[in-house]
Length: 87
Image (cartoon, rainbow, N blue to C red; front, side, top):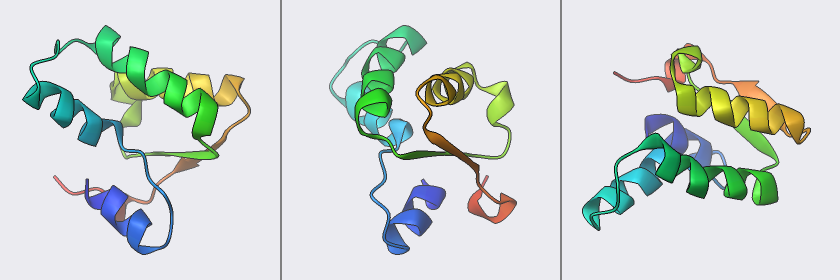
């Protein structure tokens, strides 16, 4: 969420799927990738102008699905610098 905070501070509107997932978990919704992608990908297709990929995104099935969806929809793809990543 550090990267989202930096981007918001720079003036971007940010939809961070991880922030949404925490809300879903709080309300007791299923914790499975299918459920999250069902929510995240339509938002990406409808509203996103750019997606920002974090370091190591290739190891996340969700991030790979988001990248492939963005590519198919001709949405700009950014690989964020390493300093946007906090362990």
